[in-house]
Length: 195
Image 1 (cartoon, rainbow, N blue to C red):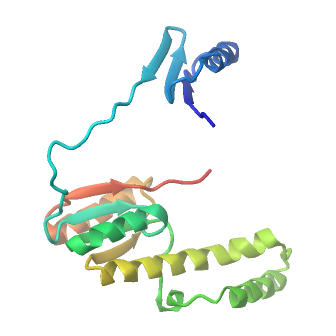
Image 2 (cartoon, rainbow, N blue to C red; image 1 turned 60 degrees about the horizontal axis):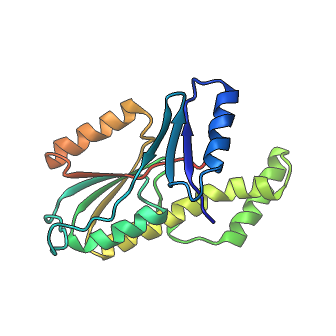
């Protein structure tokens, strides 16, 4: 499959945007990133470029790295590759911090608890409602597992509950990190919502 990304101007009317999309569909093997508006077509050309030397980049020990959305998924896997360099990882995420209870995870038992609580509240017991109830437990368990792995690999790790879209909360955490560690050496921004 050949799947290009087309950006059109939101301020243009629907009809011109439809024409832009139709025109792009006529381009044989369109580039991957294209923008179209009343002024014309803009493309991003990517070129393959290597590093300027053969050294593998390294972090100084105890480098403070602020990571948004890094306690789960692909970002946690990337951090596992950095962990042996012994950084201080400050992980920010919207999920509540895991507790000792979250170190173990018995999904069938949680699903039974979810059913019982839904019935007690008078809510419908549906697969969707059960999954909504279990999902936060599953997320905290994954975070707990990843924090343990990162620590075992050599990193010092802190997990802080923070929605990075909340400027006040983020500012408060950054002030605390700077007060304790001096400054932040790097930021890995990987927070996002699947919506």
